[in-house]
Image (cartoon, rainbow, N blue to C red; front, side, top):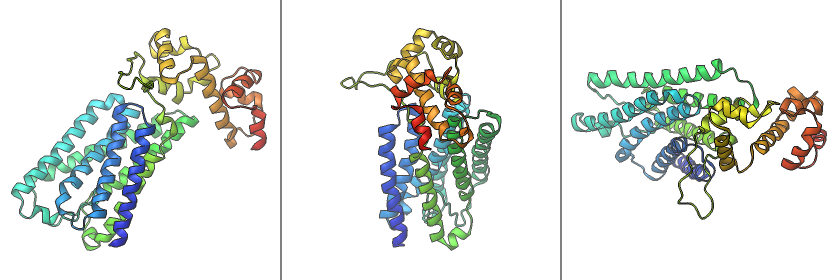
Length: 356
């Protein structure tokens, strides 16, 4: 049992590190940041309880509530990143699940004898149901809610991996991260079921829980770096000023500019992107200058250079000439590559190619 407590405490420490990392680096939509923070806070709190408390019976409600909050947070993450049109559906599911969790706990405390005693060996992941005889209402509603979450996740996964036909480095990164999260969710959904061997081997349940806690934190800590790119621009000394409002949707901009690689378009210009985003050129200029502290052309060239370095390291492009690589990232010729390369990276492109 000492080893289990040590493992939980190590997860708690890692959760603190991840929490600080999120607060410091992640500034994109506050709802997305909040969802990630909820995940880390739930895992960290549960780990601390297991590490410091021998009998967790008094914390059963927290463990049960954390399950619902984690499932809801994951659903919110995918809705924000990929399916904003499903926001209402996701919110309804989240509210129903959390409300049902609170109501079922209250009902069981009041009407089910020895409820806490029977559920004392709880974690966020493992559910041990020791002969609880709950009303038919709970037996019907609970699997319906779990199924609703499960099939929503499956629908999201299908659309992300099958119907999204984007094939570029940026989208591949977030797609791999997304699939890793889906693998975790499937684990969570399967292990949410009250398998009898958890009661027979309670330590096994703790080891499985430790593995999934750690997996969850690693996914958040090693999230794709470009997710951290800020929508927020707070100048020093103006920390109490409200963030300026923009007509440009940041998610739409990131999808068009980064995910669909607009900056690799040889004809990339602010007017064309503004038309695509259905905003005025002046509004797009204001958005880019406030968010990225540079002009449109600099933002395009900087990302072309970053993309150039990415594909140079990709075996798929190993036989490309510098001229071909320059055109691949959006420059009309290799001559137009050199000046931006020196500005945003230093040196010249052939130096990088020679080192590979």
